[in-house]
Amino acid sequence: MFLAVGLGAFGAHALKTRLSPEMLAVFETGVRYQVYHALALLLLAALRGPGKAAWCFTAGIVLFSGSLYLLALTGVKKWGAVTPIGGVLFLIGWLIMLLGRGAEW
Image (cartoon, rainbow, N blue to C red; front, side, top):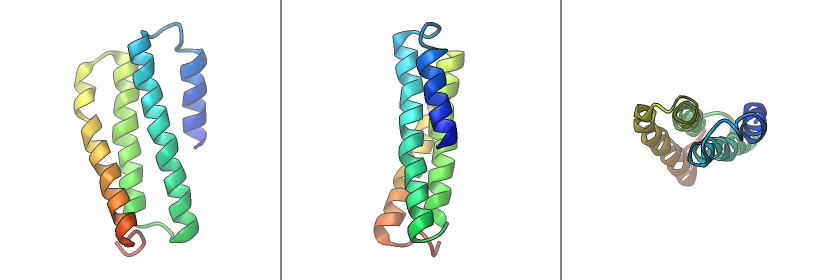
């Protein structure tokens, strides 16, 4: 959450004039999904303890949000190919939580 807040502020202030509106939106999407899944990690920690769902969310943040940050900051379109892998990890993490196996796996 600390990183998400810091990156969100960085995007809103330092990048606002340096990125195109399209790339700023890409960066903001990375921040938004990082916040959602950081909150999910906190929920998992409070309810069940770490497990496979937590690992999926953590890897999803790195791959999904990280690739969007890199895409926005570098303009290298190939980073966009990594984003769906992170998205799939998010979905797997939510399925694990739905099935109640977040702590066992």
